Image (cartoon, rainbow, N blue to C red; front, top):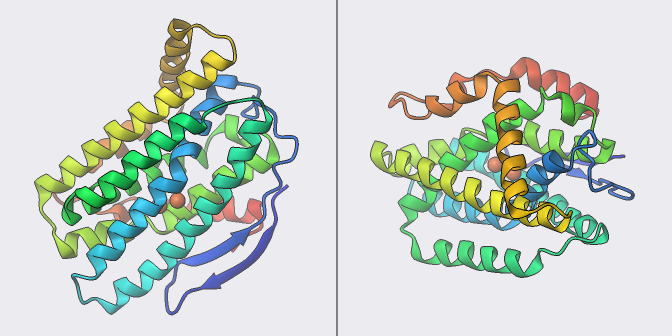
Length: 274
Ligand SMILES: [Fe+2]
Ligand SMILES: [Fe+2]
């Protein structure tokens, strides 16, 4: 079971940084309500999180250096703290995947090297637009996970890991967006970054999910079919997801146009965090 070690506010940031201590002992392969495909959907994202979140932090830090907004700088401190904790807990889960017999390190090393290369070669504005787009994605997927029956019925440590991360993605959802708007603000680049983030996360995590399913004994064709079916089910169970995905294309979009306060309050009280 999970345990909240402590909650701290960095400077004057209103975004809390919570240190968690998840115990992943005995998490089975099919921890997501008995479904291997759904568990792997999260496994794939889990592998991308640590290096991806370090990419996001770097992009936000570089964007902040170009602007003079003390409030946003304070909020960003909470964002950095939360993303750092996410990377730590998700990296811990890598060991569970290995204990359950999966191999993924070689491919993951290549993916991480690619992310690091992009960090070094892409222009700062584009890195930040990718980050703002990815943060919209994690916030709306986070809201969906707080309202998902399969996650509710999954292994308690995994349910708590996913929901804790989801809560915090919603809490800091506007930080990268606001830094982008203030340091660059170009609409076309914002959309380009969003599409780039979706294409990258979707294709790379699907390829990892496919590898996991093949290691479970499925053929490549069956794995692809299962992934498609799982995505379809997810969209059917979360009717608002399509609309939330499209909302980012509006020139007047802002992450705070979505109000998840009721969802947040409920999830936080169940997890026993404030
Ligand atoms: Fe995160
Ligand atoms: Fe985030």
